[in-house]
Amino acid sequence: MSTARQRIVIAGHALRVAACGPRSQPTVVLVHGIGMSHRYFAPLRDALCRSVRVITVDLPGFGGLPTPREDLDVAAMGHILAQTLGVLDLTRVVLVGHSMGVQWALEAALAAPDRVDGLVLIGPVVDEAHRSLPSQAVALAVDTLREAPMANALVFSDYLRCGPRWYLKQARHMTSYETEAAIARAAQPILLMRGGRDPVAGEQWVRHLRSAATGAEIVEVPRQPHNVQYTAARKVSEEITRFARGIGSRASSEMSERGRTTSTQ
Image 1 (tube, rainbow, N blue to C red):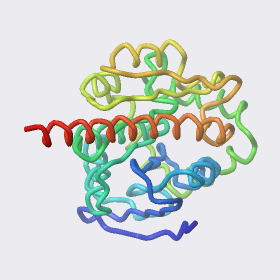
Image 2 (image 1 turned 30 degrees about the horizontal axis):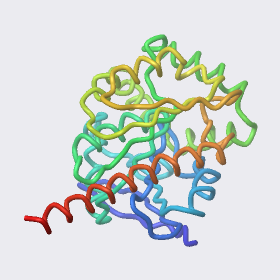
Image 3 (image 1 turned 180 degrees about the horizontal axis):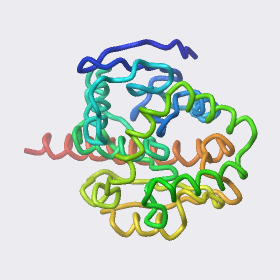
């Protein structure tokens, strides 16, 4: 399995992508959260790569990439992600977003609905109980006490690579973005996931998002924190694979049905 990283430029902004795993439909694309990079997806990526094609994306300004000169709000970053799917010639994708990556994934799905078959939204922000920067800071501080030491080390080192200016610019966009409104507009099937001890994405908030969606299910992983994709990678991988294969099976059935209908005309 190759995980060689490639740097590409979309709309004048540098991104980093890497792929591994067997060819599959749909392809799973992992979208990191604010301040982060592909690195904290490593355990999940490795688990998923055993059965599906996986692509990781580092978005502009993150993971040591150059900070954009222009401010990019959630919609702008989502459009860059959608354009990336086009450049990579991906037509059947399950976008997996974590934390603020949920918001970027939603915007990409809205911008390129013909390329995105489904959405997995892990630890979605911003919880109604934490819709301010100070409140978010408190929730993240509480979560730090529940994370694995290696997860905290990755988070803090990636935050340093991102830098405070870009982080705070994106944090302001994150707290003002109406995730529930975007979910209501998304036509794709949605899997909502959270750790059972996640103080950032609370249980009631995730249930609220499910009620706003056209079609969504919730999976909660007991005793896990906000970075559940790191601390419980195997369980999260199993749920994503199940969800992706279900989408693939439905798509195959629809194609077969269309073929039978055409042959009888």
